[in-house]
Length: 261
Image 1 (cartoon, rainbow, N blue to C red):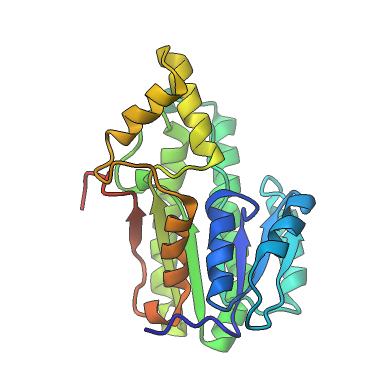
Image 2: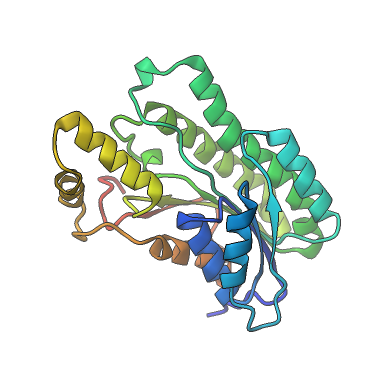
C-alpha cells in the first residue's frame, strides 16, 4: 500500500489544536511538508516545532482568520505563488449550539462564511497547482450530522449539509484531473469543542460533566469517545496515493454511533 507523501505539501486549516493538529502530525509522519493555517501565531509556531521532518520536509504556517474569507484567500494566494499545494484539509471550528428555529440570520451567514465560503475560496486557490501536478486531495472535516442531524446543533447541521453537497459536486468536476474530494465525519471526539458541548448539556440538565459525558458514551457502540489522532488517521489515508480511487464519499469516524449506512 502506497502511503508515501514525500514531495507533497499539505495545507491544513485549524491546525493548532484538535483534529486539525492531529491531521498535520499524521501527514508529516507520512512524509508531507505541512503548512499550518490558524489565527494564533504563537500556537502555530509551537505546532510546527512538533512536526516530524525525517524526510527533510520544510514545514511552515500562515496566520489567518476564517472570519475574514477574502483576507484568508489573499494570504494563501501569495503563499501558493511560491508553493504548490497537493493536499488541502478544510477544517474550522463549528458554530455555537442551539435549535435551528432560535438561530438569528447572522448566525447562518457567519457559519456559511467560515465553512462553505472559506473552503471554496481555498479550493479555488490550490486547484490550479494540483491540476498542474496531476495530484490533488481535498479533505473536508465535517460531522456525522451530514448523515443524521444532531439535536441542538441547528446552524451546524444546516451548514455541514451544504458543505457535503458542495464537496460531492466538486468531486465529479475535479476527478478527471487526478484530484479527489472527500469528507471525514468525526463523531464524538475529545476536543475543546466537544468538552464545551458536554459542559453546556450538563448545565442545562443539572447533571455533572462526567454524567453528561457518560450519557454520550452510552450511545457509542465502541463504548468510548475517540481521540483526535483516530480521525486524523482517516484524513492521512485519504491524502495518500493509496486512496486515489476513493472520491466523493463521506467517511464517518464515530465508533459506529451513526444509525445509518
